[in-house]
Amino acid sequence: MASLASCIFCRIIKGEIPSFKLFESDKTLAFLDINPLSRGHALVIPKHHGAKLADIPDDHLSEILASLWYPLQATGATDYNLLQNNGRIAHQVVDHVHFHMIPKPNEKEGLGIGWPQQQTDMEKLKALFEDLKSRM
Ligand code: AMP
Ligand code: ZN
Image 1 (cartoon, protein in one colour):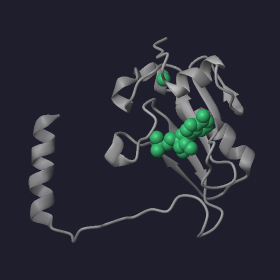
Image 2 (cartoon, rainbow, N blue to C red; image 1 turned 60 degrees about the vertical axis):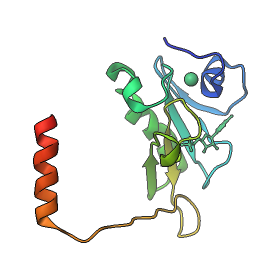
Image 3 (cartoon, rainbow, N blue to C red; image 1 turned 90 degrees about the horizontal axis):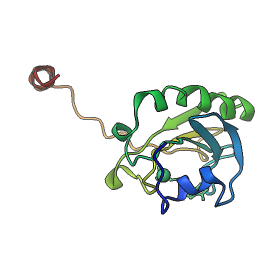
């Protein structure tokens, strides 16, 4: 399993840094976020080190959704966001892939989202669609 000695989340996996571990499997770990946005805000990480999603092998990602569900159901949250940031400009601070499970109990707590939607432009959408499809 890939690991990086200087990585804070690899060190949490190894138990070198304390954390509140909620769930653990061979390939994943769920623990409480140290600066929560709301009660129960947890992180789920693959034990395989990689900075961005594309750096993690598929078989190490396959258990992530189930591992998010355990801490989620323990909070009793009915409204929540799942978030996974890649890259500094996309708000990634820790360079070990992690999924946030953030309960949204009310308007003030939990994740706030900016959603800068553009006007619908079918011509532009069609051109983009054709460009993307040609690269797949
Ligand atoms: P991101 O902006 O997606 O990279 O989020 C990184 C998250 O890791 C933040 O929400 C931090 O509060 C959290 N975090 C950083 N260090 C620790 C730690 N030692 N234990 C638990 N959570 C941490
Ligand atoms: Zn790591």
